[in-house]
Structure formats: C-alpha cells, structure tokens
Length: 199
Image (cartoon, rainbow, N blue to C red):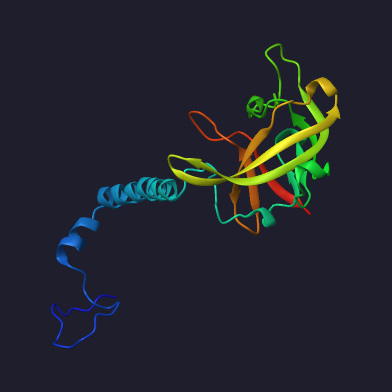
C-alpha cells in the first residue's frame, strides 16, 4: 500500500511504499487510459524490435574478408539438394580434382526460391554432377576488396549441362562457419546460399 507521506526527507530512499505522482495517478486511474496505454505498448514493442533488427542486419549475406582459403575446405549444401565439396586447393595445371558438385546448376543465376533450380527458358532443368577445381582470390570493386571463389569444371554428366565458363561464388559467414553464395544479384538478396554441413 502507498504511504501517506507527501515528500521525502533529505537523504531518504524511495521504496515501493512511496506515493506516486498525482498526475500519473490521475492518468492511470481511468480504464480508458489504461486500455490506451496497453494498446500502445502492444503496437510499439514489436515495431521497435523490428526496426532495431532491421538496422542491425537486412538479412542479406555479405562478403567477409576474414574468411580465408584455409577455412573453406568442406561440403556445402544449398537449396534443392545442391551440394559442393571443396578439397584443399592444388594448382590447376596439376589436373587434381579439388571440386565435386551434385545437382549443380548450369547457370547459378537461374537458381530461384521456387524450386526451379537451373532451368532454361523452356523449363528444362539444367543440373549436373561433376568435378573440377577451385581457387580463392580477393576481387577488387569500387566498394573495396572481397573474397571470391572461382569454380572450374573439367567433366560431368550430363555433359551438355556442364558449363564451359568458370562460375563464381562470394565468400561470407565466419571462419568457423563459412558460407558461399551467388557472386552478384541485381536488385536484392541471393536466393542460393550454401552452408557448410560437413568436412
């Protein structure tokens, strides 16, 4: 219950028994004011949390130059059952297969969030299982340097769905949990992020 004292003595400490300010007591004394306050809190708390989370991260992956080549070997899984395995790198002219892919798209940018991975304009899925090699380098842009993976395919099946040109993936995540994703996406976030799921 509230104390009947109106003022604090010098040096006194306010406790739960102190009388609330008269303005606050009058404002909270009516049920319409209490209802309005409860509704305002229900609206403002979720909105505030959403704004804060949005300010911290927009949800899109970003390159991380702290993720180095030595952090990358392992197996990564992406959407629609796509897999990529990176073995420790070797010079390309040695002919060592340091890259293996499963259900990999002929065109990385044809991968979307609807399940139409690697389809051509006629709706035919262009996916292949193959092997090749990979390399890591820092690409130079107007925004600075960022880590990028280059994939070169030597063989695969079906043969006609193996790209003859190199593909590129950005390197993000953290050194302990690296992520790979499309090199560049115009007008939004990537639809295909590959997360490491094994060694």
